[in-house]
Amino acid sequence: MFRSLFSTPKRRLDSLSEQEVLALAISSEEDDARIYLAYADRLKAQYPASAKVFEDMAEVEHSHRNMLIDMHNRRFGDRIPLIRREHVKGFLERKPDWLQAQLSVDQVRQEAEDMERSAYNFYVAAQKQVSDTATRKLLGDLAMAEQGHEDVAHMLGEKHRTEDVQAHEQETARRQFVLTYVQPGLAGLMDGSVSTLAPIFAAAFATGDTWQTFLVGLSASVGAGISMGFTEASHDDGKISGRGSPIKRGLACGIMTALGGLGHALPYLIPHFWTATITAGVVVFFELWAIAFIQNKYMETPFFRAALQVVVGGALVLAAGILIGNG
Image 1 (cartoon, one colour):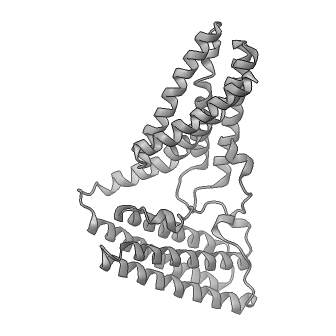
Image 2 (tube, helix red, strand yellow; image 1 turned 90 degrees about the vertical axis):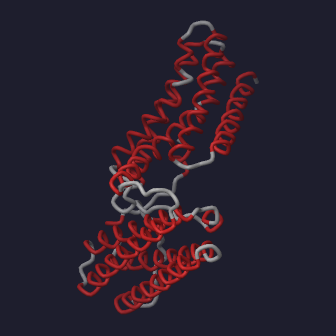
Image 3 (cartoon, one colour; image 1 turned 90 degrees about the horizontal axis):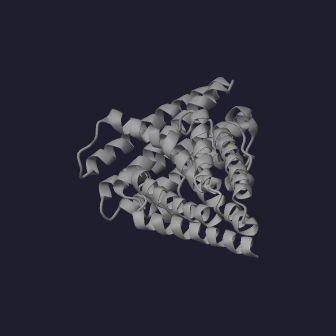
């Protein structure tokens, strides 16, 4: 619900002009080169050979950038429009340097694979909407180069893993499940569980009427579910990011958002105020711990850190709702 209110409008890739496509490709190559150099710095002490590979990959990204700039200058002049991947739907968000410093070798490998897969998908999609023959050829060549980088990143991860490698099909299926269902569902559950606490408990303590409180909770939960579902489905079509069908992600996010709010709204169908309120409080407790468990299991967030963030945040919102309702 909150994300939909403050999200920045983004362009669709197929709405970009050929000049904007080249400008986007230039900025993307610049960003990826910086990220690879950050990976190299991260790995240099313990894995110098892998660090050298990432330095070479960054150098290749620089060469791609220069080729794209030359093409832009020949066709449109030397004034390059400012357009970055965060302005366009479908691109995976890149982690800043201070978050990359916490990545393990496996996570670096996975991030690099995701980056190259996203870049490959972008060039394939961009090639289809460019009419100039030379530009189409350049974008096609870059797509093949990015696909080669993805293979290099995967081999690096296999080299440094300390546990048995799972079958490739299982890993791919699990990753797709997380991207399509777990991530949007978790975002919805967190938003629905936490954002509806304040209005539901404020209404409960302000009115003392369980039926009116249930109606407030029902409307807040359903409204948040619709809002979050449409936001998730519309901000990324999944073609570049590989996150899967926007309809599936929108349904997962919207349904989990609504369920997150309904969990502590349904107890107010109980006519007795304190029985309903205590039951709702118990439900909230289990909701917040369930969120922490999912973050730990699927998103690899340390359990106690996830629990601290979710439980403390939820407790503050709950307290705010009770104080406002008693005000």
